[in-house]
Length: 371
Image (cartoon, one colour):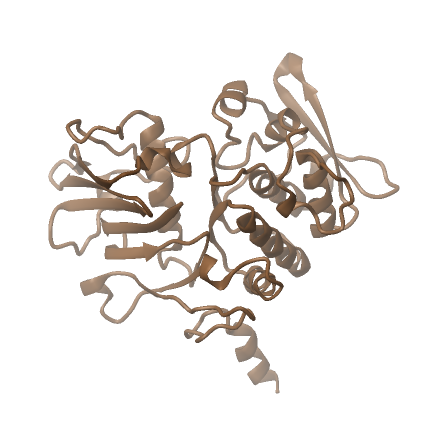
């Protein structure tokens, strides 16, 4: 499990260490650095997959800024504009190791220079979920409804991925439909003793969007996957003729439910296009996955996701110490110190020790105006 992420002169972060727990929730007003945290982790994974980060302190290291997971532009785009030195650093800490990558920045050429890799401790950082085949990263900009979806045998079969936009989620679900799901993630009212991935995706989809049913049909001759959406007692229809949220939610459900203990899942806005009840149930599922040993780091604007997590803690599905809540802001001294954050602590009853201003408090503000 990753215990912390260190960022030096990376976008809006001048020098910060972000604690990570089994479940880490990133929140804040737009453009406050939430996505940057996930991008930094995805950037390390992307660079490792391209062979540019290696387990050798003597070898030069490089960052692949533009690839399948993230597209960050050039060195200038990720270099903190008020940095005091021409260096960019990313570090990871686990229980038994600490790894740091430091890269020089050449402002005249707008490029990053080969980096230095330093590691201490007894564990190999590249054996954590972030760098293995047990990692899913699902962006906020996901594939919407289509009449059919692409298939990619190498990505899905060999690399165990479904695309950062969820573009191969249907193919992944069809290929792994009989995979067993950890019992901790089983739908609470599902009575199937050894539910498969497809069964559990169906059960949770029905919970999030009542009555929804999914049908998959591989079109092998053209390497496409046809998806049809039905409801109880109705015909199956094209996804373009049903609610947008169903296909937007599918990659999230598949990523979570297919994950094994020690896997890591990075999620952006899992609540997108969901009704508030569905958002709360998504929070509940996320908590169940964490209880099964999956590490989840998510960005969200949803107080319903937060409340689903809080209720799961009150119901003893999660322990308070397994959860980190970070609220990001740009303080008055932003140009000197960069992005900052506060971290409300949660107790066993789901109560928070403090509520920073603008931390999911808009409902109370609106209610005050109405009363």
